[in-house]
Amino acid sequence: MTATPELTNDEILQQTQYRVYDSLLAAAFCLCLIIGLPGNSLALKYFVGVKKRSLPTLLYIAACSIDIVSSVIHIPVVINLVNGRKSGLLEDQNMCLVWYFVLILVQLLSMFVVMLITLTRAIVINLPFFKISTRAVLISIFLAVVYFSGWNVTYFILNEYLYSGETVYCSLQQEEDAKMGFPYMINYLVCSGIPPVIVFVALVVSIWKLLKTDVTDLSQRKNHQASVTMIYFAILYLFCNLLTLLNNVLYTVTQISDKEYDDFYKNHFMNFYSWPMSEVFCTVLNASLNPVLYLYRMKKMRAWIFGTVRRCKTAVVSSPRSYAITTTNFTVTAQ
Image (cartoon, rainbow, N blue to C red):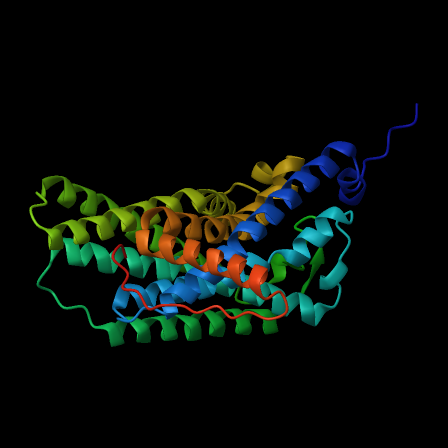
């Protein structure tokens, strides 16, 4: 009796159930694009137009800028998902490396900026007389960009990355022979693991402090609203990046213990979807939901956006060939 030949991963991916999973994931990415790109673009335009450039406003500008990139970074992955996981735009090795570099950079920077937003607000809540240096915070963002970029460029140069249908983007070839593999893994885990821990601690401390604080005047009410917005922002961040944290923990276990990679990832669904969802989708989802939170919590931003939409409609009706959108400077009350 002839044994049934074992299917390759490429053949398994062409089965109906995985084509359905790919289509659903691609649809989710497209929905994030529809919400995230215009939402973050409008939010960025609003924050840039704010008259008083406080530290929270500058951090929101940084967050929106990163989220705009995050909202479009997944487009090559979407094309590959709907095209049977063929290499598509990532077929060229240089293009693949540049794309993966940008992906990891915006992922880590997004985590870092959210950590700064949460941490600075927690300091304001718990140490109201402590002055936070805006310059120091902005310099820390610049240093983070340099640090993340330096590690990634060095590692990518030393090792070979090629497109993989299993992950739908670039992956390391011959991982067991990777140069600087263990130091790079530890560095990535630290850079992606410390921000959620700090955000969680700051979140708990801030909630505890707010529950003990009585709001008596207008100034305290504004600070309370800004703090509640930060709490929502932190909760959303932790929720969206939970899968990233779990997948990193599983992968770390396979590297530092007797557990083999296949012990956790031998399931086809885990093998085909854990990495694109944890490394790409979580970042994109967080970026697309942030402007929804801005719209919900910031009344003046909501009024500005609705006013801008009304002016656009009026301008199009009155002069379809040309129109101009004028904006007014506002002060962010719920930062």
